Image 1 (spheres, rainbow, N blue to C red):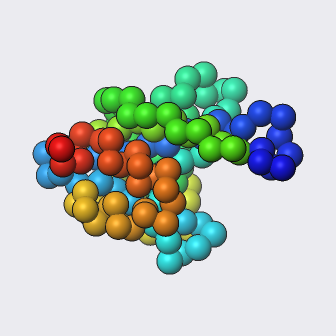
Image 2: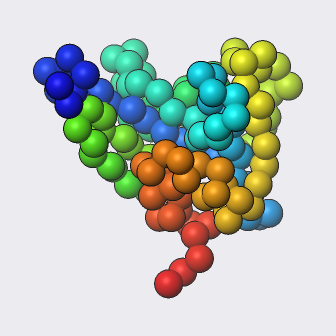
Length: 136
């Protein structure tokens, strides 16, 4: 079953946390596999209201990131999930956050971010459409 038992694909909102002035992306470790890196993402909840709010909430919960959504990047569909990606300009990093004991976070340049998330096609694809991606 392609939708993993759901009647419709799950809606997942993803933040691409950026420090535009330094050209860096904040990546975090997966909770399930500490050796894998991801971007903050998670399911949209009715209480979020908007997809952008969900992306901001996930960034705060998973990475301790506060900031402003500055740009819609893309929507990527898979059989079980619809991913919505937004750039988030980071203004503050909390020292202690909801998942701080379960994840590491690290600022890396664009090329390193793409390498680290390459195992998850949707994440790498969205990064390639971000404002930090080299122009073709």
